[in-house]
Length: 181
Image (cartoon, rainbow, N blue to C red):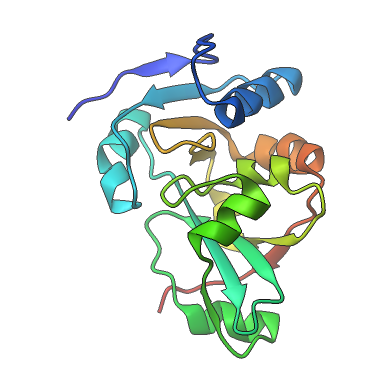
């Protein structure tokens, strides 16, 4: 399927409040961004047509928790890289990480499965979620992620993610090095 790339806010009041909050944040920060509206994409593989429209693979966003459930993590990594739990667990000093459940994700980030995104941190006022970023993501010229809904994707320069978006989200990232092996 071919998708059209749009510039900026769709100016559609019928969009979900969480999605609208992302567009408002990007506008307030002065970030020019591209947007692709698409069918619901529940996995990174389902985003292949979105990747083609934007010209690069979007970010893989994973909501994780430790084995006791006492800590939650949001991992950002290149979309075309394999995720290996043991790599992240070892760097965090956790015995084991698993995917966080839908109820926890909704309560902490106001997100549902398939819509996991760094933008969910807008709603983590308690700072309960630790942001993890794979260092390889920093070398990518553009960053793409869902705006808290899996029927749209926004894209902008990666350096603006680091210099503008993350400070506005009030979450200091912890960097990890993932090989995908």
